[in-house]
Image (cartoon, rainbow, N blue to C red; front, top):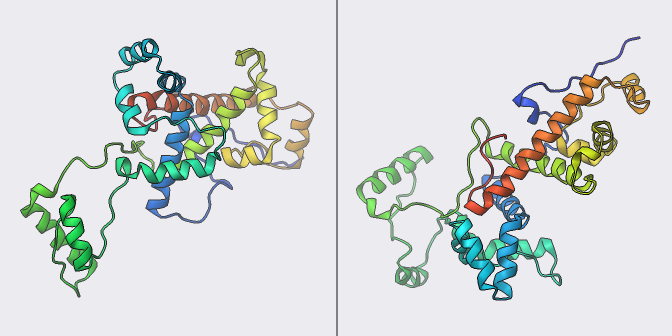
Length: 279
């Protein structure tokens, strides 16, 4: 019998795989915006910050004080991000987009734009922009060189950038980080929902793996299409005849993704995202 054996991952590269999650290339701006939505979503899952928002809402000074003593940046984060628990009357998606727009000054890079004399007179009063004469007709690399020289001669234009910047994960491009966070969320959701009385151990490894592998959407999003290769292996899996080593490898991958997402949630209370270590 000739079948294509499955190849479970056995290293830190297990987070990476070619799968249906890959879609048309997105602009840097779109990737950044989607990452900020992921950041907000993770922050909403942080139990400590949720408790702080709840306490603020009912003016529970004692709880607020205790949480502020425990988390040094929590009050600052609340001032910046606000009460991020979605109102029950609001749509999660539309609420997040509205929040994203209202807070873009905290994490988005301002865009350069042409300014009419009238608009310039208004912008100048804000003190947030500088009037620059831009020469036309240069090639892109030449224009960038002109800007580099200009900035070097005017260091007063520089600052610290957006207050909240997305962390870089070594060896990953922004689009790869976005895919990783989304895959990790799926693993986190499944493992969390399959808890029995708060104890993941009560759900067997075989049950966890089979539940996810049998769900095409989860399998695609997780990039776990290496689970089953060939009709024979599919039949063997359905008959619960996968090897113990394979089940162990698959489950380890899911657990590592779950731990990564949990670390992302935990890090939001310190104003960082995503987690830079695969814990």
